Length: 347
Image (cartoon, rainbow, N blue to C red; front, side):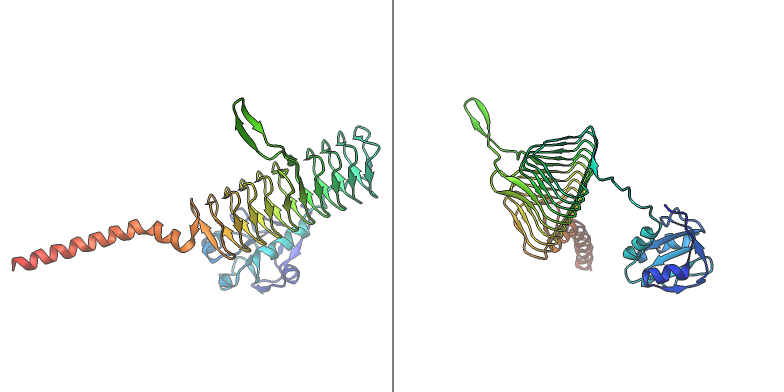
C-alpha cells in the first residue's frame, strides 16, 4: 500500500458520503474493523456488526445509514449508500500500481514462426506458443504458459504464469486468467466395452468471451462437440469446475469449488455459492441464486433461490428445516392440554 494521508473530508468527497464527527481527522492506511487502529480507515456495511464498530479504535469508519447515529466521540463516521463500493474506492487510492509487463518475447520462450502476435504483446519466460496461434494487441502471456495449436486470444488480455490453453480454444478481449487455470482439457467421457472403458472423443473447443475473470486452478473442459461457452463479464473464483458443453451466462458469479456438470446452462447473472453443484443437462434461469454447498438436480426458473441437497426453494427449505422443532413444540402443547383434560375428568 502507498504511504498516504487522507482526511475524513477528503474520504467523504471520494466516496460521496456524509460526515458524522470530526471532518479533519486523518488516516494513513486501510484495515479491517477488528484490526484497525486510530490512524486507520475501516468499514462496517451491516448493522449486525455494530458491536464490532463500537469496540473498534478505528479513526474513520465508512458505515451504512443504519449506523449513522453511532457515537463519534472517538471516531469519525462517513455514511455511505453502498459501503462495500465506497471502501473499494478508497482501497484503490492506497493500492500500489500493478506490475507492468514489458512488450516483447523472452529469449527462453518458444514461439512457432507461424504465430501471429499483435502490437506490444508480452511473452514471458519459458512460455510455449504452438503453430497457428493468434495473440491480440497488448496481451500478456505469463511465464510458463502453454498456448496450444490454433488458439486465438484477443487484445488486452492477461494470462498469469502457468496457464494452459489447449488447441483451438478462443479467449476474448480484456480477460484475466489466474495461475494454474486449464482451458480446453478433455471433457470426462467414457463408455463401457467388453475390453474396458473406451474414451469418447472430445472434438469441440472452449470459447471465453470478453471481460471474463477466471480464478487460480480452475478447469474448463473442452466440449464433446460444439463449444463450452463462458459468456462476457462472468467472474469465476478459484478451484471451479466447468464441464464439457456447459454454458455460463453473462455476468454470472461462480464462487470457489462450485461446479457445473456437462451440458448444463446458466442464464444471465446466476450466482453459485461456494461448493454448489449444478447437475448435467439442466437449465438455470436468469438471476438464480444457489446457496453454498447446495446441489441443483433439476432446472430452475428465473429469479429462483435454491438451498440444500437436493436443492429446493427457500420456502420449502425453511419449512422442512424448522418442522422438527415446530413438531416438538406442538407435541409439548398437546401433552400439556391432554394433562389438563385428564385433571378435568377427575373433578
